Image 1 (cartoon, rainbow, N blue to C red):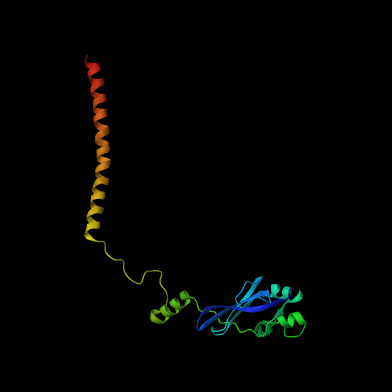
Image 2 (image 1 turned 45 degrees about the horizontal axis):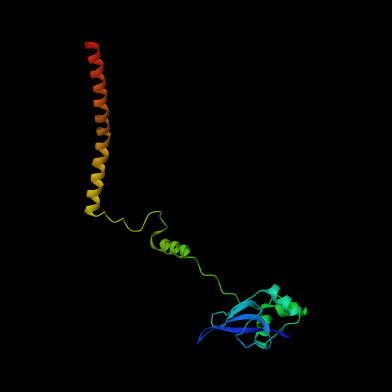
Length: 171
């Protein structure tokens, strides 16, 4: 069976995204593939090219033929040079510079504004609604009433015990 490494198209009408797939040469462009070994997004700046180098080397080693666009991608990533034993195996792939983290941006903005970050919130907390205050006061009143109520419940039992003891001594 003749095997090709080719691009299968995904994405919207004007936003193509491709998978780099290993498939039988007789299948259609977006047909069934044997294995997906990477992806290619040409519209991003710089273009996103991700190829599993180990799997690409395997398939090239067993005789899979890359199509012309895939051959160019393999040359950019350096996989073709590695396969052929040519110099330049590191490739010429451009990498997008990482975005600065939001925390770093926030701290930089604070440093510009007033000198440095503080551990406090930037806005004061909202005051509670009056209904919430009333409910909170009611729970406070109940909490204070419970300890005194518990003492009241224990006192009559103690008084009753005293009364029975006193009654027993009087007789």
